[in-house]
Every structure is written in structure tokens, then in C-alpha cells.
Image (cartoon, rainbow, N blue to C red):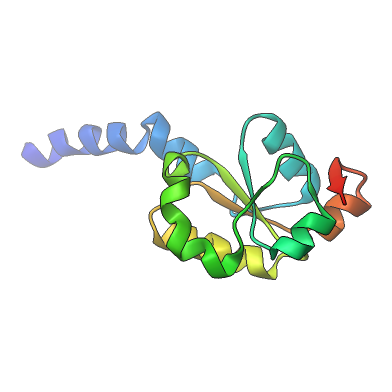
Length: 129
């Protein structure tokens, strides 16, 4: 009888909104999806180097270079259980940045496929120096 009682409790926990939202957040998105997510309040993290960021970046993206990400995780603590999209130039560094965030307990992290290059080529809002 105790086992039957446990099933509804486990199902209720699995269906809680925080679990569903974290589980349903995509591990990668294209630039159009990323721009839509950003317009809905998703945090866009750029992990390129400062010179690359200064040259061109997605509007409202926040820069933390990949080499500094591990040591600056405290700056992102408020996003630990919120959606974060990670972008770089092409998608390789952002994939690594995504791994770093996930290892640190971030629950809703997505890699922006094609990176800033694809973002600009799609005509999405950028800041140029």
C-alpha cells in the first residue's frame, strides 16, 4: 500500500512547474528562437573575447568571456534557475559555456547555434563599434 501512495507523490513532484520548465527548455536554439527568447526576458550571455564583443554583439547581450566564466559564476547567480541563452561567434565556445553553467547547477541553459555570425546574417539587432 505504501508503494501505491508514493506514485502520486512522485508524479506530482515531476509535474511541478519548475521541473517542467527546466526540462522543456531547449539545449540549443537557432538565432531566430534565441532572439524571441531574449525578447521574452531570457538572459543572453556572450562568451567571446572583449575585442570581438566590442566589434559586434547581439543587442542587450552581456559579456563574460569563456576563460573567465568559471571564476565569475557568482555574477550570474540570479539566473541559476532561470533561462539563459549562451552565444559566441559560431557556437563552439558557447557550447562549452553551456557545459560550465550546467556543471555549476544552472538548470535552463541553451546554446545559440551559429552564434553572433548567424545572428547578424539574419538581420537581428546588433551593436557595432
